[in-house]
Length: 335
Image (cartoon, rainbow, N blue to C red; front, side, top):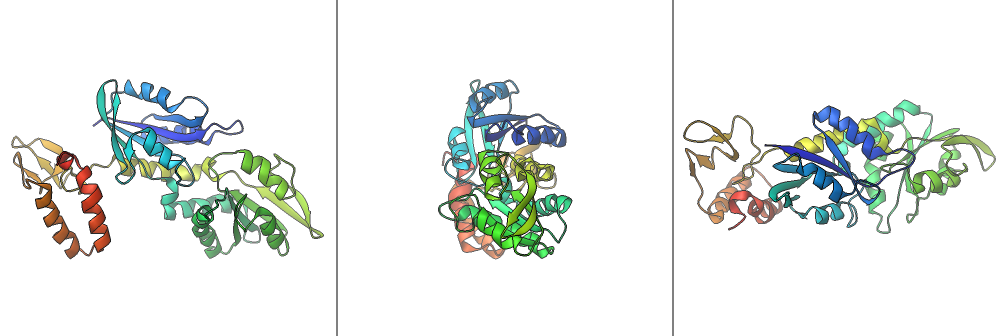
């Protein structure tokens, strides 16, 4: 099975390109080239990179959606551009006339425990427990962006930090209000921008709200007569600590699953042909000695429904698996 990997980002940054930085680190960690494509601003475009990837003749193309939060224009756009079903995160694309399976990796923010550790590591390098911590996101009208940040603030609080979470715009928890609050009890404040790359928001909008000049990342400001030292840390997407998280999402996307029942495959459960050769498409319980065990999607659905219930899977999870994942597997796509 030949794999190609594309890291898709929104656009380039003239200050520091986190996409290129992470792709270079991933190339080293995964031992294979990770291509960068920009969906909205910058080169190379997705179309240009697909032409380049076609020369690798992959069987599977893994796409990393390098965005902070899912939305119709970020992850939703990735699904549309690569012809992928949002429910299964899989699809088929033609490259040089060949059908190639596309798998969209999970966004790194969904790896919550790993990202908590990364955030703690980034902050601990620059700030002691006597420093006030401010996590600043883009913000959203529905409040979801801010809610996505709160677990990371809570992780820092559990380590003894005084932490506030807020947004550059849209939310009530503003940069200005957080500054007033923390400055009333802290002589030093560290700000962690929860953005992918340096951008207009993190480098032009946020600094003046902290009392710094536009483009400035550190300085001493006056807040209600108190002198407070403020430092803006590197954007989370540009930190080396998240490379391992991105690599995990790629490896998970590359993982093989039985194309009859969806079971993860490894050497102990993979099926074999009558001549003893390995068949990595199916598990040994669905395909044995050159024959399929289940002849219809209805038959395997009945078995899996009973099996998953006995294993304690929640009814809604069983229903979702049978209605969305199972029909997407190769064995049943034409059923």
